[in-house]
Image (tube, rainbow, N blue to C red):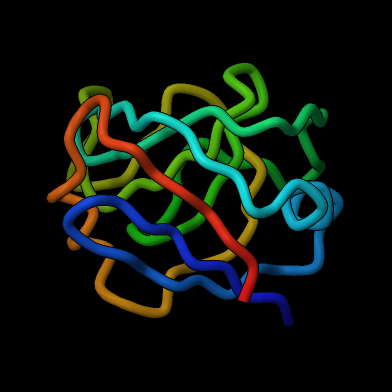
Amino acid sequence: MSRIRVRWPKGQLEAELLDTPTARKLLAVLPCSSSANTWGEEVYFSIPVKVSLEPEARQVVDPGTVCFWVEGSSLALPFGRTPISQAGECRLVAKVNVLGKFSGDPRQLASVRDGDPVSVEAL
């Protein structure tokens, strides 16, 4: 199983990736860096990966799931409710490819601010 680290000015988290086509493409472009965006309790940022939706793509995921938003070519890292969530769920703007899960507390992502530099590296 592959592992990655996501870093931002006030913290970092490690995640275990599943063996999926999108996860393999992500690993192939690491390390990479970007500028963070926030949407409710979700952090997302563009990465140089282009893929299609996988058969297991979902719109509602658990907090701390590492996701790839196909239309935005972005990693999407939900840690709680978004503006379209219902009844406490993590609902993303569209279906996403599920890449893995953070091993630490995903609520640490609450310290990410719009425009923060963010980097992803393989471990």
